[in-house]
Length: 214
Ligand SMILES: [Fe+2]
Image (cartoon, rainbow, N blue to C red; front, side, top):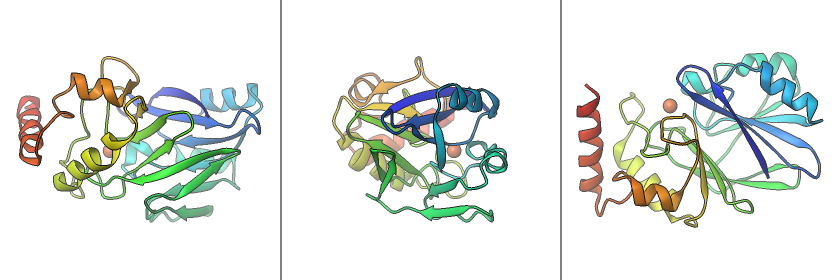
């Protein structure tokens, strides 16, 4: 699976274009960045865009959704329990569902915590996971919104994402770290968010992080 990131949006957001190089079928993951440059790239590379995947419905991650729908009225949306009133086909995904992008298969991982409709998209074949705001380079997403849950986040991070093969490359929803992408292994090695020995230790790391933001 091929992946290209586009940086911009509300707060160093990443929008990703992913595609199958054999069939040219493509999907946008999180329409969080102005669509012009992405649309240019699609045209220049003869890609066939027919899906939009949504990691979670925080406004910054779906800000440009209507622009895509206007340009591609037959596009389909994929996400977790999407309650969006739109005139396009919406497919709601569960944990361990499969979405195909041409010949590429994406596994959905339900990872609530930062938000209750957060999911990650994992392409096992190319060892890549698009994590939205569940995991960034260096830290997890925050749990300060009304539909956040720190217990859920701990479970999603430690029981789901960190259990994937260690060389899996993380493609986060924002550029908050010292580089754009990082393997699970390097994130565990370099960040105390990812090497906690207990849930209490994780809660403490999260608490200290929030205190230091003030
Ligand atoms: Fe978010």
